[in-house]
Length: 530
Length: 76
Image 1 (tube, rainbow over the protein chains, first blue to last red):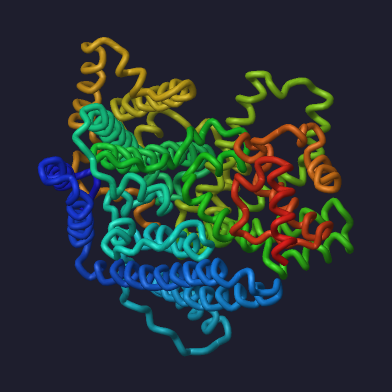
Image 2 (cartoon, one colour):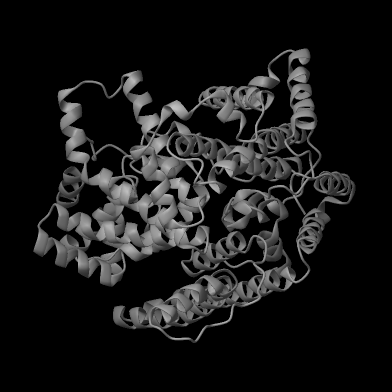
């Protein structure tokens, strides 16, 4: 089922009525039923995958949690009689049992993700290697459909099992509650990748009808729809024209395409998250924010703390930290400091972890070399900027511009351009073509080719450009206002007429200016494919 | 504690680590700092801080971090 469809609106409407009509203690069960129904609409076979993930994670987490409990009980009753060594050995034994369950769960679930998402990518590369070696043998492709949202729900459940293993919280004893956490339908399409402890606080609570929550949720959904169907889907036409005709659109048009795609992706992804958070809010459930005005970031590292936040923190908590503090990495750290001294020697292990994390982040986004190169370039930019820190310090010591508006604006624009250029690897069909097209921005920029006629040839008319410009102004204005608090709170303080005029404009825009109209499956949310 | 304060000072000379108790919450220590810090602590105190102990509560102040080091070395 598409988010931006009449079917989804009907689904939410019916769920909303039922949710606030039934006894509150059954609300979460209703949500579980609705989530599985939503998932069923995306393809009944997908239910098998999500059920397997839920059941395996449930069983492993309960087992690990039980070991924590038995250990705590044993140490409480026999701890005084045990020597320090005995305690240590006892804890080590428990840990090793827990680790076996954790590893089994991780291997099974990441294995399912790997097989469904990466098999054919691996086969393409194996076949390429066979061809290069002159062998006539070929491996056949697997006919496996990628279950919707598998990257998102696998990451959600794996964070849960790791947290239980780490003793952050006990395992959920009710398998149906874990099933709801895994399948909560607003998050299935494109996240956010919630953690069990924060989402479960409101997911399983009983919710009374609250007019303010409902109104705020609906406003957020409306804003999300506007961004998706009026702005993102409209911009898609021009982006597609540029990237699908690389022989025609080079130089200045690659630059234009780069900016257009930055606009489209932002409107698409944040619009989807607005619909997710708004839908949850209507049901009284709080889902964390996934974006904090990322295009206002002054550096790449800052950008990644503000864009797709829950993915960034997932990789930080469950890959970057464990990898960086692992025994081999600490050994490598000591070795590199001995050999390279306290400067680069200290930083090198951090850089190695950074590259591994960004390689994985790229792979998570998609099974192709484009995404791997995209990830590695992000890592490279972060490392280069860390290496340039002494240069920045020298510059700021000499020129007092750090807090000036123009310098900050320069940093913001630089970050947007850099991120947008790297993001072109999402667009073109392969890595060499992307490099070639990015190269044309330097070798044949040809600003003279940019004319009104050429812009109109991208598939957008003057009214489309007017809508997109007004939309851009609205996006920038909302981001600026958000810096001092919630836009919806501010809107709530405005006169009745003004508020309803704003809602009216949004609804009419969606209905009149929706690029394809609601429900036309022209473009799924971009992040849905991840 | 002196050794720990020196390690922290080397990382960010301009921060008053004796009083600040929002090192992570206010963004003074980022993930790269934390990893560098853990590597330093590992070699200076011979204590390995596992990933599960990397949470804001343990890194928000020098005092909290020192308490963590003490706890982990007692457990060792």
